[in-house]
Image 1 (tube, rainbow, N blue to C red):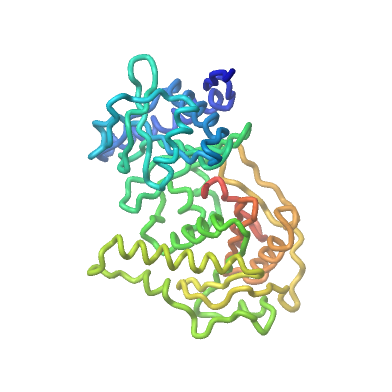
Image 2: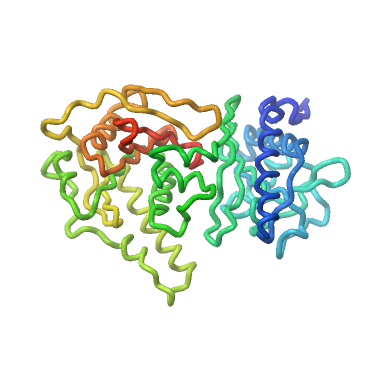
Length: 382
């Protein structure tokens, strides 16, 4: 006999719901005060708890052998244009979510959820959501991501919290104000900052997402375009050097007002995935800060006369996170050690490292700490 599982059976839902509610209330009310339209409605604490519980148990089910991939959005049909509305709304329960998951597993399609009487109901689907809309995504079995829309045409989202089993990671939206926080990490956080998704640094964000997605692990070194100093930290000759530098991505970064936006975005996505795929080759891909590919499969070596890197500062942009000082190998092995050594020797470069288990680290030199700073950012990329 199959028992009914409620949000109460998943304690994490009750623990995190008040914090998530406070986040959305702050940003939605702030958006209204600033005259931003349209903005979403705020889900109450009980609704957040019920949504998380139903999504968690749905993530552990299988429908015809497939793992459910679901995106739930808190809104009513009247808050969006051209919603698909069901004649009979569906109850919000794990079994139902697993059954309808195949219809909404493609990116950009959300199940709309709102309160109907005393309970929550799935009223249909939408591919358009308002600014700050509460979105809950089932990313993998037991792995949920709470996010909201940036309100930009790019369709990008800001991660608010990542829940995995009994682990809760609430993103610290003030982390980008810390000294030496790289623009790349600031952009991943997505909260108000001088960095926007229109700036070139966000190509690196998209590369990071694509690197993590291929699941093989990899490293990307970003070096100054006007200097060859980085070569002193790479074993010569480079097996897979690119000559001339591959500049397709750099070309796509140039403003082209006459080109349709959707075609530009599609071309950019293909170029980014192509370069990210090269990071799966043993070694590191090398990209200039002008987005020109110089090599892939490059072997990192300690620069002649340089000391061996022995420790790095490690932080993660989540609430309650504290900095620690570790040996680079404690982050994931030789790939992380070599990336830390590269940044230690080439302080105007950065290194992006994806692990096969989904962890992602950005290595950058910290002048304040006078050592390599390892930013653990997988909570921002899920």
